[in-house]
Length: 397
Image (tube, rainbow, N blue to C red; front, side):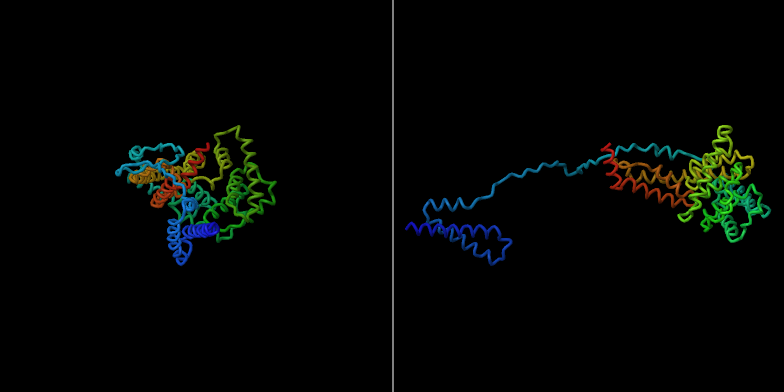
């Protein structure tokens, strides 16, 4: 009887463990394996009813139940009419210094038709100067250079393009037609203007000067200044401009400033050299360089009063155009409401417009400036990379 009980206990235990395994893996095993589970369950229940108490206790203890636990969720509840507030890290950007109502209140007397009419009259006189056949080629180049630096060359794009195209296709490399004082100045000025307008001019035009570098006159400041400015329109293949000509011209200009700077700081030549050494003209922002050169051109002894008046009037009219565009952009930005909703972003609508004028300064491209300013403002306020990277850097500081 004792052997029967032991054998019966072992069989019952095996059936229980098999039942537990199949029941635990019922979703992994095929359906054919899950059918015996019900049978084993019924057999175990029937056998348990006819067993002594010790066997029933053993069967119950062999099937362990999982421990129970309580899941607690802590959440902030909001009313149905309220939206949850999401707190974002801020980079502590200061509010804009430019008030919208102040921008709208700005008025410019040069936006009237009378100023535009006076400007157009002066423009035709300057056009006559540009097309005058009695002027020499060097005088034409200097006039084109002044028109560019004074910010009014956009009025004469066709005339300037015709002159430079004619110059490019004409073989006028005979330097003896100029006085020795203007050889370097004329060649460097022509080289710079042609390259600024996209003409492929080789750097070999300066070879004749490189062979006689020691014979340059130190008082030829215009030639050295033109050579210095031309060296900054070099390409990667222009090794002479970068390694030889620029180094030579820079050193000569510094020596000129050291010699004449302490004697006459108000001299036009000294101011222009200092300005060029600080940053070449080709690297400067157009409108800021124009504002500086208008004052500088008025100090020259050989200035043209009509050209000076024309450039001042045109600068004021273009400034009025910028102000009207800024009013429109500021009104659009205010209507979007992004500055009030996105407190963690930058509100720099005026600064963005100033940046676009550095790229596109001609007044006829106003729509392009307005579009670029809106695009930059949206990128500045909604770029996740800028927002969170700036916020992270501010937190680290």
